[in-house]
Image: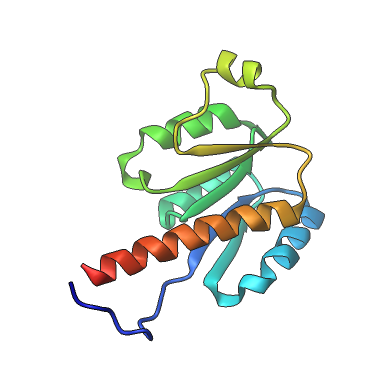
Length: 145
């Protein structure tokens, strides 16, 4: 096993936040700002715009909720789950639905982490940090192989 140089650049974690709430977007931007260039945050105001962006460039992490304007968020999650081209995408689902309601609606895919609302932007930043750490650890392990 060889060691990788310490200065090997690490690609920024690409995060797509689906929200039409400008205040929430700004709060998340502020909460994620300590990560600097390690996190690239982009926005989609609707589920349809999110799907278009995912089709153009799959994010490392999708942050969404189920109440999307003009779209069934649960159906979107199940559609994304069936797409092999985005199998590595992680999803953070923000919802006020009970676990029983989620199960009645077909459950959430295994790659989806459920966060019950209300939730703060700072709590989202902590979870993004956890994903970022995991991405860095996996990237470093791959470099050492």
